[in-house]
Length: 119
Image (cartoon, rainbow, N blue to C red; front, top):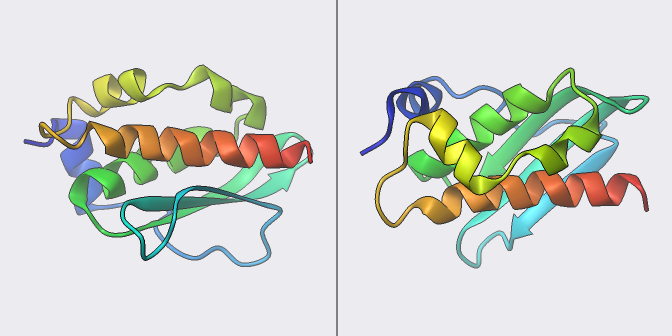
């Protein structure tokens, strides 16, 4: 069962769209080959000015992508390292058993974006 915060993010997802004119795209998993998530970022210096995500549509993945992109917007991208999957699950109020990988997916996609910024 989705926790209260996770349920709200699933029912009314923030930033679930393709973002055009991005500076950085982070990815976890492979589209069409199981669970995946991409997080696209538009930057203003070191600060995330706008963030969006795409995923395969599982309620838990949608909730995780929604929360992560809302959280990182307006913050320095270096904050990506401060977030881990366990903390994400806690702030969401829990994810259904067997869906823990969705939190890890969102965190990995965000961290992948942070690594790409320095490339």
